[in-house]
Image (cartoon, rainbow, N blue to C red; front, side, top):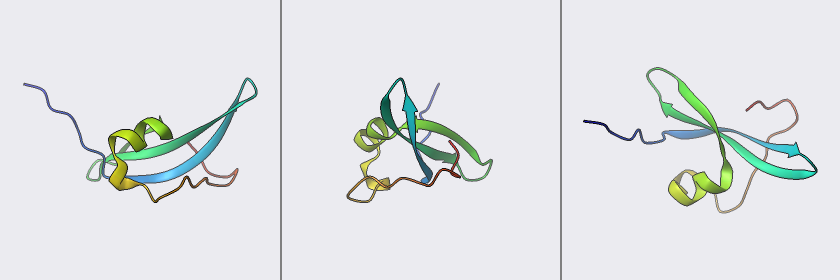
Length: 66
């Protein structure tokens, strides 16, 4: 049996520049107990986990990591 982990929180935002395009990335915390987190494309996360996001996109500064 398998199960899908639900996201707990968005802990960081970053705008990545790749080949002249800007891609909004978010760091998503999946398990608060272990601290497991991954970087994901913001738009995809917004579609799947809309409750975790404010009404508009927010980006961290250049010191943010993802």
